[in-house]
Amino acid sequence: MSSITPGPQRGPQPQPGAVQQQPVQGQPAPVLQPAPVAAAPAPVAYPQAPAQQPVQQPAEHHHHHEQEEAPEVYIYSHSMFFYWWPVWLTGYIMAVITYLNGTKVTIPSPGGMATETFIHPSKNLGVTFTIIFFLVILITHVTMRGLSSLVAILAVAFGVLLLAYFGWWEDVLGVLGNIYIFMNVTFYWFFATLVFLVWAFSFFIYDRLAYWRVRPGQITHERVIGGAEKSYDTRGMVFEKHREDLFRHWVLGLGSGDIQITTMGARRESIYVPNVLFINTKVNRIQEMIAMKPTEFAPPVQA
Image 1 (cartoon, rainbow, N blue to C red):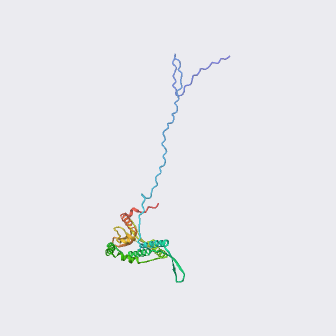
Image 2: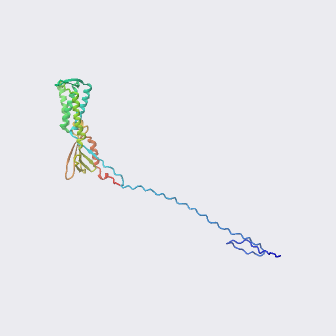
Image 3: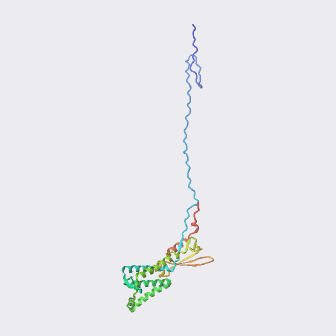
C-alpha cells in the first residue's frame, strides 16, 4: 500500500505590489495582507456656464428721428359778395314771420283768376328789409378806411343830435311813419333764395379756385383750373394786416381783413389779398412759420 505524502502547503499568494517579508527564525511568520486597491477617482462636476440666449437687437431705423410734416396755412381771398349774407338771412326771417303771422290776401289777376298770398299787416318788415338791403350795398361798394369810418360815425351822431336840438325828430318820424312797404311771402322766399345760391357758389366754389399756400420758407399762389403756380421765398418777406374798414371788416365781415405781402430780393413785389376770414389767426400762424427753417420738416426716408 503506497502512502501519499502530502506536498508542501502553500500559503496565500502575495498580491501584486505587496512587499514580501522573509520570516525570521524563531518568530511567527507574518500574515500577508493584500494591499488596498486605490479606488478610481470620482469625476469632478464643474459648474456649467449658462447657455447664452441670442440677444435680439433692435431693428435699425432708416432715419434717426421722425420728421414732422411741414405745417401749412391756406389763404382764400373772398369776393365782396361774401358780405351779402345779411340780405338772404333777413329775407328768410321775414318769410317765416310773414307765413306764420301774415294775412291771406286774394289778389285778382288780369285773366280773371284770383291769387292768394300771405302779407304781413305790419309795414315794419318791409321797411326793415329795404334798409338792410340798402346798407349792405352801401358798405360793400363804399370803402371807409381808418379816419373815414370815424368821420362817418361822427357825422351820423352829429345829425342825430342836430335833429334833437331843433326838435325835428317828430317831423322825421312822421315822414318815416307814412312810408308803407309790404312784401308777400313769395317775394321774401324767392329773393332770399336767389341771393343765397349766388352767395354759396361764390363762397364755397368760386373763391377757392385760387388760393395762397404758406409753408416754412415758401409761399405759393396756386390755381385749381390750369394748375398754374407761382412760388416766393419767405426770407425777408413782410406780411401786413389791414382792418381799417370798420363796417365791412368788423360788422359784416365778422373779423375779416386784408393782407398785404411784400417780397424781398431783386424783383420786389407787393401782393394784396383782400377779404380774408379769421385774419388774426392766419397772420399769427404765418409769422410763426416764417421763423421756422424748412430743413426741420424734411420728408421721412422711405424704407
